Image (cartoon, rainbow, N blue to C red; front, side, top):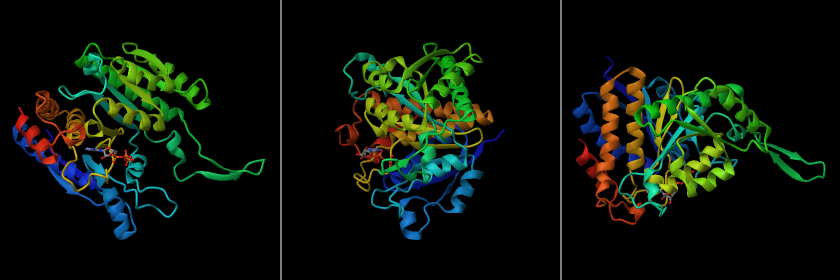
Length: 365
Ligand code: ATP
């Protein structure tokens, strides 16, 4: 049985480097405890690499990522470092396209003990997943926007949102399978909500039609539908009612930040970009230039992303000990916070990156 895994590390910029180092420290005792081995291949890429070399993401980093068992990614991008056309450095978007990472899995789960913004006690039950389609939609327009002159002589730009049948079918199939596996662990779960704007856009009506077509193949999963605007309202009013929520790329980008806000911020929001072959795991946040180098970045989101990585590797290769290690790591994060004594800076406390890291290591069961 495969027991050793090659992980490409892409720490990137700003706090990406800090939260990756913290996560590696947590993975150390976990490997010893559960008897598996991760070998790391640290690679270059990001905005500062672009500034130094003129290349944001070397071919060697892309090649290593293609060959790896999994990729652990910090954050890439820096507001002051941009391409000549003014756009930001974002190799993560190229990785999604090149490795066909079509499902952006963004769990929004309230960690017990954290001071949630919503006063309703049901907020403690927040546990849903945004599945962000990550290879098409409005992001299809990246680098392809077309400047035109309108019939009235005005300047305009067309950015095209592309919705394909293949891209949509695989997004929904992934979401239905995810709901099935969540239902096995928790009978209250097992619902997929299609989030769209099908009352306005033809592409979104096409998505909704495909959602209902694919649902017939997953009759054990409950289905639900919500327009994106109503979904944003409901995320504040009753987010505990959602389970698996697939949606178009840009909608997923925006709502996953809204979701992170519900669970105390970006420092608690992990993510996985998954395809049928490859998996990339990263916190939902960016390089956070405002706090980089201060030792106060919260590594929890990256640690939880590493737990998702172990679970994905375990399921993919049929290695039960990795699945157990993933569960242990997620439980260890909960144990670290549950007593309300660990208080990171991002919730107004004084605990920095190393205190959070030490607490999670100390909680590993
Ligand atoms: P990007 O567009 O690159 O994803 P962003 O615009 O979402 O980035 P972030 O870098 O995620 O911006 O930062 C948003 C805010 O959240 C900043 O104030 C930052 O300090 C804070 N933040 C992000 N990640 C963390 C973290 N791990 N710990 C503490 N604060 C964080």
